[in-house]
Length: 195
Image (cartoon, rainbow, N blue to C red; front, side, top):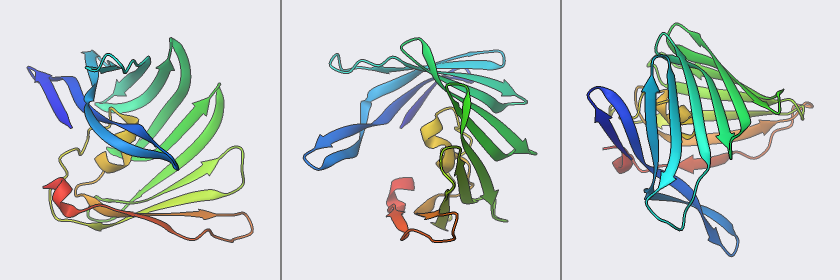
């Protein structure tokens, strides 16, 4: 991922993940053919997803509202129609809650927990349409400085951009109303990705 600035203002984010079709489903594929144009004006930012490849066309726009340099609202627009709305709450400068609305109704309520080293410990997600909770646990942090820390302009970067260091493991578990849990689903990253 590459960041471009004009003066001290972010103007472009190059690189994103797209689904690569396979016979068994999709695999995430990172490409620098996708980029985001960033327009900052006062307490607002507008990000438009684009591509250098004429075969890839996007209609996605993110509209952000800032308060005290923190994102407090995000609207995702597809084909000129708002599809998702997010609002954020903080304790100091640390993200505590994220509320996601779809069609004006609360869809997801996420709570963020941090450890004493200012790294994301876990996210607990509650959904309006089911009684289960999803818990994402972040662990095996390296000691390297997180190069994307604070880069919360893209929702996809949100968990990674919240920590001082880089997590190398994420474990996801779903907990049902009766206390039963799904088997842990683990994802690991090689430390060399963050050096």
